Length: 335
Image (cartoon, rainbow, N blue to C red; front, side, top):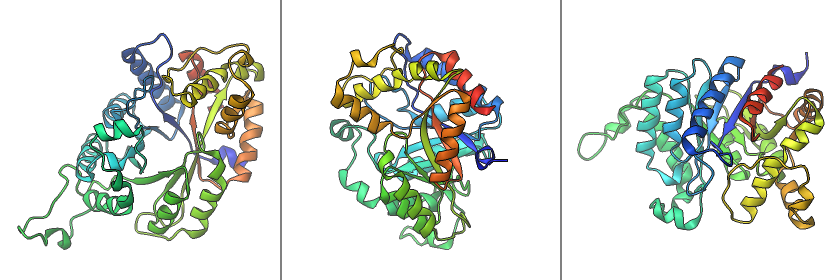
């Protein structure tokens, strides 16, 4: 049996709104997508926090986590991730403590330190730009708030410690997410599981994942390292169809580069009518770890990637315009 077939397989979602579909129907289709992923045996489905990005409907991340957890039975549902500098740790702990109480042993809390938006929207979120500097301390605070009581919590001047209720003693698993070396270093130091965003930052994947594994310090949370690599996936019955479907994602990356709305457009037959040489290079660099093709082609590409990157789990984005073809891609992947 190959190493690939033994790896857990998971999904990352931005609740991308396809051109021509409204937010309500996008979210209802996301629910159907999650139910199919649950039926097919995927390990987890995470939702990413983004704000003020027209075409991306995952801004109320914990609300969507609750909806998907309520409409699935087995798969873990979580954040990929909550951008911690946007939120007080106490509020995050209360939200995820509530989710964990409703859906025991099924909730993950992935944390990032980026704003997940632009500078103006960060200010609208009342985000202090300096808070990113305190990310390690706020991760530690969340670990305390979600962990068991201890005497140190009670040594406040008023005689009463600050607790997350719900949240306290829920022990919701905390994951550190990253697209650079910073979170890899922190995850290794704290003995936490780690996920690398290869779906948009492929250049540092090898260095970050290698550092994490080589410098991992066992903790009460995790005895051995656990690393996820997230990749863009476009899977179809044939290579030609997959390449055609992949033009939707390519167009959306172009929109991101040009500061346009991020609706997921229908595929096109000829990208050369849309991009020039320079923008094509930028899109291809952005999607350098993209896995596109038929089941046999994708299997070969994934075998190669697993050999290159020593990871414990694979996570995929699945940006296919047609909703039924997106679900079909899940079925092909599980085969």
